[in-house]
Image (cartoon, rainbow, N blue to C red; front, top):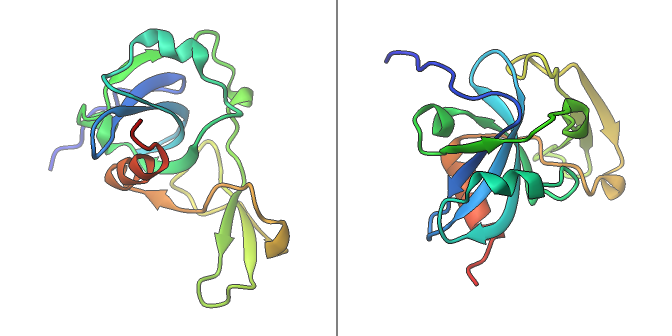
Length: 159
């Protein structure tokens, strides 16, 4: 299979089709070598592909989901780019620490830090955290674009 040319960059705003109709909005908050992005995803559900003016309404402190995700949806055009955020400041869209819960030992939780310049690389830090204090961190999962569509469909109910 031929490698697709990268057609996105940090600050790009894109539409994510939901499995039962409508669209969510995503932002490429971090894009490094390879085809993984850090996506910030937002509601509310839009009935049609939103226009570029939605970009000025996005607040990096209010996503419904933050996720490391494969960029295939962007590369193949299923997640259409609808605009970009003017005056992009990457520090306002940080690469957070992610929460990893040990599936075989539920009492073990870790905060995982990745390298912003290479999201494909192994974590640069893994530190234990008390599971009781671990709420509010995004889940340490690398998802395919279809899994993100399913997750957003569940998070953004139809009106």
